[in-house]
Amino acid sequence: MIIDVHGHYTTAPAALGAWRDLQVASLKDPGKTPRASDLKISDDELRESIETNQLAKMRERGSDLTIFSPRASFMAHHIGDFNTSSTWAAICNELCHRVSELFPDHFIGAAMLPQSPGVPIETCIPEFERCIKDYGFVGINLNPDPSGGHWTSPPLTDRYWYPIFEKMVEYDVPAMIHVSTSCNACFHTTGSHYLNADTTAFMQCLTGDLFRDFPTLKFLIPHGGGAVPYHWGRFRGLAQELKKPLLDEHLLNNIFFDTCVYHQPGIDLLTKVIPVRNVLFASEMIGAVRGIDPQTGHYYDDTKRYIEATVNLTEEERFLVYEGNARRVFTRLDAALKAKGK
Image 1 (spheres, rainbow, N blue to C red):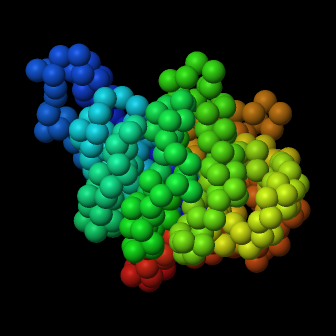
Image 2: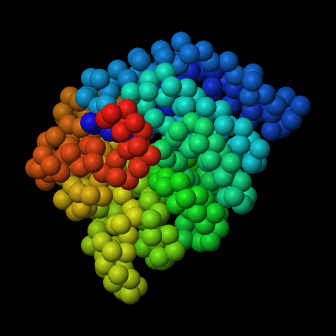
């Protein structure tokens, strides 16, 4: 199977964005706060939004299953308070669940959490458990910077995060470390904030000892790990100076990277530097980079082409990148597939 571990519902019907606009506007006039029940999106609308977009490209490019979560830039945890985020997360997660019910062979959910700056992370646990227990989701997206580019939260190694880590371990659910929209003019959302966050999350883990406390905790760092593979020597050297164990032992039993890297040299670097067991196939299709590369004539986010073309992987290793690693990291996904005889 070709399993894409990084997909977002970027093509949701326009009614979702319109409802969100009303919710945001109501922050200045609470009397106009929309109800979740005011949002009406039919199954036919969901089908059309998927069949003409993500599913069409999956069939065209040859992928089978996508781990599907709400649109990352729409999470916008910095807007409003916890109640704002809680209602918004529940709506977005339900839509992803409905997509997975309509297309059970092609999509399975990962949850957005109702994070809010300065609010205890424990408040996210009810939505976490609802999505895992009731919806059968197999992962979560965890935002290390719910302030939207101002980095007001403690690092991931801080005990602030431990309650959600304890739940992740209890249910054996990995987290994709994924920020949302930047409201800091210094950081373009997808061009710098996302990649900054990937690099920052890795470095936070490197400087701490989080995985001593949580030896089975699993993080997926997206977008190829930001700057991490390119500067692997720097991180190895910093770990050495900080008297940390070798990175294989210190971090690579717990941290994994996806292949949302949009050119051949980038994938070649990733697969040469990072151990194959730590690389999971992903495309984030119809996401940050949607255009066609004039040098190749193909879509930038058609990452399967790069995996096929790299000389750094054997066929056995390609299997790990495409399927084996995803089933090992996302154990609930593996169980769901086995329940279907796959």
